Image (tube, rainbow, N blue to C red; front, top):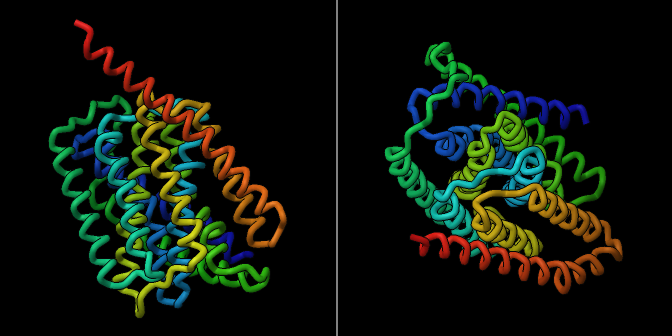
Length: 353
């Protein structure tokens, strides 16, 4: 337990150090906060996931490496965005709806397709990394047409560039060591409780490695930087799916195994949650407090299902039946209605003289 807590503390501290330094460097580039959130902030807050997945792979714990990425993607959307929207309704850029959200859906679908044979090979890793490079190229093109508004609170010039670089290196070192501690603690907890490594990866490790994203988005929401709050989540998920899984599959001693349970349940849930972002973001180009509560409720249902299924509780079957035949159809109908209403409203505005 001490190793687990120490690992989580080091993950948060290391990520915080990296994010602060990265934001100061990015501010010198004079790009929009959304671009900063999608790239440097997202990359910095995704570093714990990279550290843990690499440590898990080298220790031959593929279920933790893959499960933590899937669980982190679900947590980032439902919990991080949900809590951030409760603080302040999140403004969603049109770029996110037109480019980044479809790419995140495509990345989730790509991972699901590549993992269909229950493994991720080095060739799959190359495909994922090539897709990430394509995404970064698109972002670079977008940044050239984006101008960061001047902020009266911008103090980036007070910190020399080499100091920021040293902070980033120190943060990376903390993250790598924290990944080692967290992996050992997770395996120990799985052994003591008789839980599978997949469940530990989906829950404890996934939540632990998502805490930097959660802290970053919550702080951004509190400060009114709503573009960073949203961009951090979307960018982190893209880096996790394409970068973390890509690098992990590429350097793994053998192909990463993907459990049948992950194929049957976890990956479809991740894909469904990712697709859910599109109609929610499109309807008004914001995430309201009500939609934030919806996200949190969905994660609660997902967590209850994982725990009840793992422990063999009868609640698992009842909850799954309730989700499949009542909650999900009602949710789909509601989202279709709101999306259609948003389309009509926007189409009507275009027709006005």
